[in-house]
Image (cartoon, rainbow, N blue to C red; front, side, top):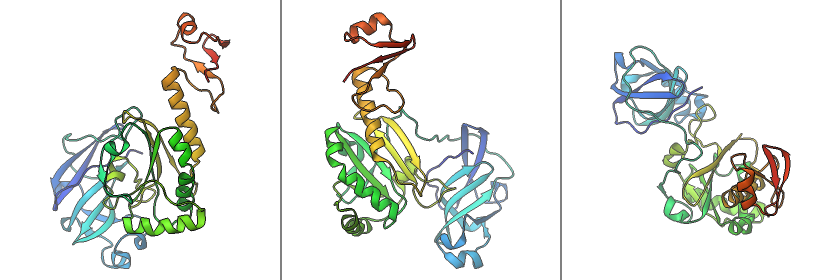
Length: 317
């Protein structure tokens, strides 16, 4: 499956997708009409979950493409999924790609490790946040949850708040996100404090326009085209993405594992080592094969244990 997300389109314009290769997805903007490649749109998912409810099922089962203006869209295989406006009503729709292919005009890729974390400005429970400026010289953990007032997320936000001493000891700032508004976040904070015994002590982004969710690829249309998944990004002080992961909706995240990954990243940055499977702080690390024994003796005068010429274990903390 191949996915790509494009930005907003002007009303009356219909996007046409062109797949050149598994890693090269391109899009063309065209006027709605016969040669747009899309003649009809059908509801995506269960009609009662899309804005419009029964009206969508009964009255808008198939919508004339001339009356749809897309806001953003996702290509999966030979299908195109849109969050669209149908006569002023926001709907989740999908259609099939047919007809003329357009020339290459734009390529959108998912975020990768080593890339610069996109900057953004968004409202939050602690007021407007300009992400890079807010992060400063700290590490960051940006994590999304699908919706406020949901059980798994309630436990997760409480867990992150309880770990404040651990985040602070590592110079880490956590920041959460959902597509609900600030008022809902603040009301939910009372439930979190009541049930988890911990008040929120970090900001929760109110990504109501899904701006941040889109640029961080937090919306997966085959999961839910309107809500964010349980995504996590670890970002270093240089604003580089160092780790990303996605949990299924039914499974709460293990934030002790996220702390362990940050410990490993900070150690490997400082000591130029790698960490083995299931590594924990204070356990031996690995001397990278790229470092010769001669260079290793200068860097690690305490010595090491050679299990194989390419597997040398060293105690560095």
